[in-house]
Structures are given as structure tokens and as C-alpha cells.
Image 1 (cartoon, protein in one colour):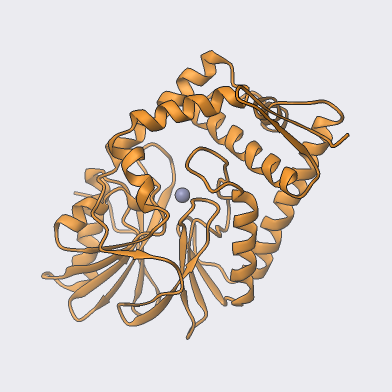
Image 2 (spheres, helix red, strand yellow):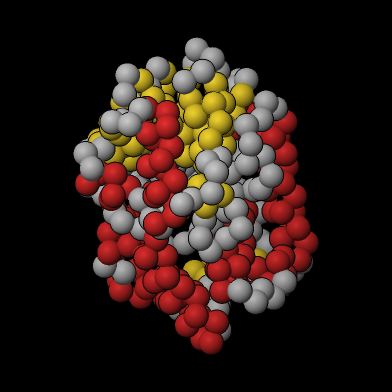
Length: 327
Ligand SMILES: [Zn+2]
């Protein structure tokens, strides 16, 4: 029997449900939008027995004992948002996913060897020593048990209007954290379902890696600007509680990344460095393999943005990528 449901009505007809993330201390929020015995979902948590049981219980709670899930919009394919999608698809739910997320599913969760090899080359090129690279490469495999991939019913481009429960929500494509990350926007009440794009207590990981967009940090900041222009009154994030000050939070995010870029320029001085060396300079030597990977990816995303804006040269050849101030 699962613990008491962390279920709250965050606006009329919209229920936020906290779902456990098995390997972390935190929770991820799914949103349930019921109408006449039908429930639409935004995100679905991990594929773990506990999480799925909690979500199914909540669906009956808000939609009635015979409630059925009609559509499931997944903000992006990270395991905590997408993991159980295959189970709900099997039960008849239509899966909505941005089309840039679709081609990432197979290499990441089904036939992973090619991606592991690509990640291996990526780590080598960016200066990761072999002993660390081996662990970091193999970390890709562990996530698969928490994900059951799903056939996608509707591939999104962005700017679609979807009927979700009693609301009409517009899809806002917000690449950066993941190439096809989407938020959902309720223009009537000026409420933003933000996914991982805008979180109250954390800065979402923005990383350059073989499956990312080529310049994820600038993509992320550009998407934040577009969200700011919507002037949200309320943000419903995928982690943490709803909050009001979208503009303040967006400003904080932008200056956080601006400061990090300056910090990297300072660390580098006049020397030529690999991404790995910069990641250690910024984040220190990390013990946990996931932290090492995230640190490298974050460092590379900032380095790439610095190269794009002309603050750094990115020296690339077959075997290595190195970065330095223009001379
Ligand atoms: Zn995520």
C-alpha cells in the first residue's frame, strides 16, 4: 500500500501529484487534468512499481473508479518524466512528445550500444582519462530499467493547442535541458506548466553531449526569454512547489549562467584546456559518476556558448577538442 498521496488541486481542475524518484531523494510532479471520467496527464514518473501504483491510485481518485487516461503529454524523455509512458500507452493512452525527443528514445533506452560507443568517443575527445571514461560511459546503461518506451501518437513541433482536461494548453518548445523539451501554457489564466525548464530551487542541467542540441545553453536561455515574454502569473514546475515570480526566477537563471561563463574565462586565463580540465576547475573533482558526467556536460555547454559568442576559440581535430582565449 503506497503512502498517502501527495495530491493537491493547484488550480481548478488541475491536480499536482508528487511521485518518488527511486535513486534520488526528490520527487517529480505529474499533473492530472480530469474531465467527465477521462484524465489527461502531463508527465508520468518513473517506471517503478511504487510510482506507477501511486499514479494509478491518483487517476482513480480524481477521475472516478472507471477513469481512463486519454492523453499523456511528456515534457521530455528523462526517466523521471517519461519512464512509465509505455505502461500507459499499453492501456490506451495517446502519447504526445516533441519530435526532437522521438529519435532519442531508441538509442537511449532500447539499443544502447551505439550510443555508449558515441559517448566513449565524446569523452575521449574532451580529455576524460580512460579510467573515468569507462565508468562514465557505462552509466548510460543503468537508467534503462526505469523506462518503458512508448509508441508516440502525436509528434509535436511546438505551438500546438491541446485540449487537456478543462483547459486548452499551448505547447511551448523550450530546447536546452533536452532538445525537444516542452512547456505547456494556459493563456487564459497565464499559468505555465514548466517541466524542468524553470524550477524554484534548482538550476536544471544544461549539458552538451552527443544527444544534445549543438548549443544547448543559448537554446535554453533563448527559450527562457520567450517564456518571460508570456508574462506568466504562476509556474507549475516538475520539481518543487508552484511559484509566482517567474520573471525573478528567469533573471536569476540568466545571471547564474552568465556568472558561470565568466568564472570559466577566469579559470582558463591564457591557458589552453580540455573540457574535462575546465569541468574540474569549475566543479572540483567529483566522486560520483553521474556528477562527473553532469559536470563535464555543463562545462562543455558553457564553453560552447563562449565559443559561439567569440569569447573563446574552439580548436577541434580528429582526436581532441581544446579551448583557449583568442590570440
Ligand atoms: Zn529532465
